[in-house]
Image (cartoon, rainbow, N blue to C red; front, side, top):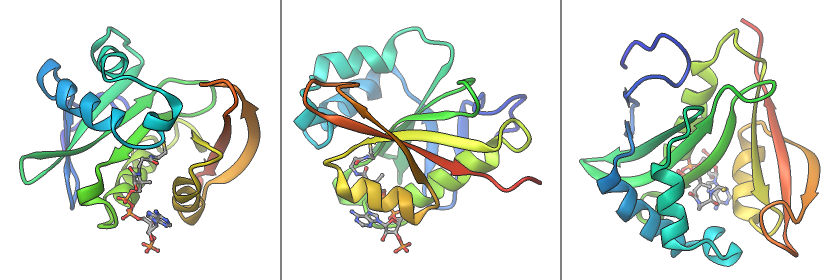
Length: 168
Ligand SMILES: CC(C)(COP(=O)(O)OP(=O)(O)OC[C@H]1O[C@@H](n2cnc3c(N)ncnc32)[C@H](O)[C@@H]1OP(=O)(O)O)[C@@H](O)C(=O)NCCC(=O)NCCS
């Protein structure tokens, strides 16, 4: 793992099942195309172009990494830090062909390990219809904190989730 001066500032992280590499204009194109074709982004009406802009725009607090397995892009993780009282997992996707292999679990573990002392919580949201993601997060220790109706799209409810980290 690259030694980072502050949480989520590394350009490259090696996890057991995958690597995290800063997104580039090149891989942002294929990632945005893949995201627009799967839920929850498809259902919520996100477009490939809008997702591409999200991945490449200047946003110093948003740390965006391609998830790479065997040199192939297998997903994406975007973490907003600093953010209120702990880092906010703004987007996590493991593409369908790589799901169920422990990659998502490992990324959450990396995220928790990356910020010891900086906060005692990590935060995310998931759409209320995304029952599989909610099961994933709850299985990893996240608790539902609040309903956020119409946060990203009219008629849809996002659920704010928090995972409390053990103090060192
Ligand atoms: C949700 C997601 C990130 C999980 O990543 P993953 O790499 O497939 O998950 P893992 O293989 O690490 O699974 C970790 C645990 O969650 C459970 N889990 C994973 N997907 C699950 C699902 N669809 N339903 C129920 N449990 C699930 C696994 O069983 C596993 O538990 P176990 O180790 O006790 O068996 C991935 O499926 C995904 O990107 N989905 C589409 C996009 C999405 O919904 N993103 C999150 C909300 S924005």
